[in-house]
Image 1 (cartoon, protein in one colour):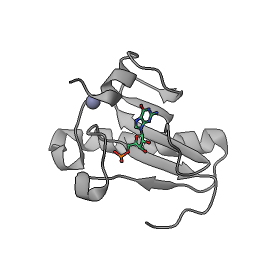
Image 2: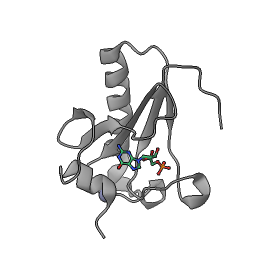
Image 3: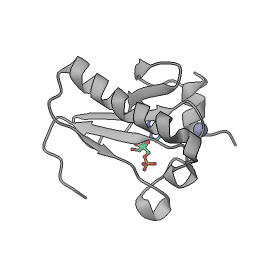
Length: 109
Ligand code: 5GP
Ligand code: ZN
């Protein structure tokens, strides 16, 4: 079965997209854990951080720079970036993504 996030990237499923460029997509999390909760992901299907290869290192940097760009554009002074890795790390969707959380003080889990 095709990956849920790939379906969103390919517009086969709707979501509230807040940013998109040739390599990265950002959309609102369907079950927000904070007043602002975005998911930042590469368009390339990489299952998790555990599956990253050396040629993906620039792409990972771009995900973080997109977080910074969104924060600046939306006037968000502080935010938390979180990546779950594997089932034991709390990952449910096997398409690498950064959680962008803001809008209230966010505790470490
Ligand atoms: P994970 O636990 O894999 O790090 O995070 C997956 C996130 O995807 C969860 O926070 C969950 O709420 C979100 N999510 C799951 N299904 C959908 C969906 O169909 N649309 C959107 N926008 N978010 C989803
Ligand atoms: Zn995918």
